[in-house]
Image (cartoon, rainbow, N blue to C red; front, side):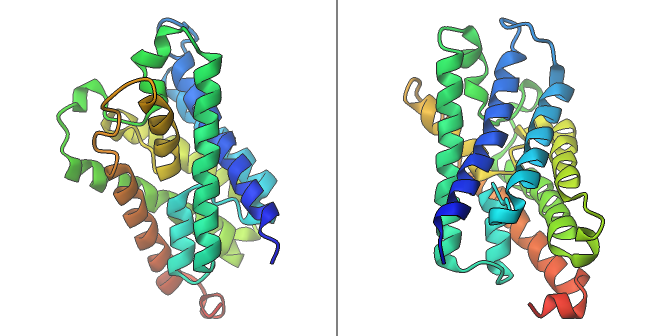
Length: 239
């Protein structure tokens, strides 16, 4: 199998999502004054993901998220070597997006004020426990991966042809619902890219980072297994 095309699709697709999300967060800082608000940030993530899924779904499946890839892995829809390649490509795409945003917004207070768009609890939830971060992120990612399976895996959902739209909207409403609580990452790559880049210019940015892997991976795996074993038709389940 030629892995180059799907890996490149995963890298660029993740860049779509992370560039749009990080840039929207930075642009929303008072020092930039775009005033798009949380709705605008949610739409930036959701629209970018919708486009990425529509553009790259036919090439790689457009996982653009290690949690989605892990969900496909535990249900036998991707082999371990390719899954590892997907996750590396996703992390690279997210890191490149964060680096580009760092260059574009260089010298702006927004980078420090918004921690380069790293997902994290808002001020009202600054004392949230790591356990609660994992639980919330798991719930959000459960909803996201359920939407992925329902519209991009299940043949009944694929027939409706709204996979990218539905998946993007799920990310958008997750951000609106829980953005102030955990930052609503739902995606280890989305958390990893800006954290890695920002750690080069600031210290202490890896605090509770593991939660943004554990929560999405847990939620994604549970959603994938539930949909695979309980919701798919028997003939689809046998794949």
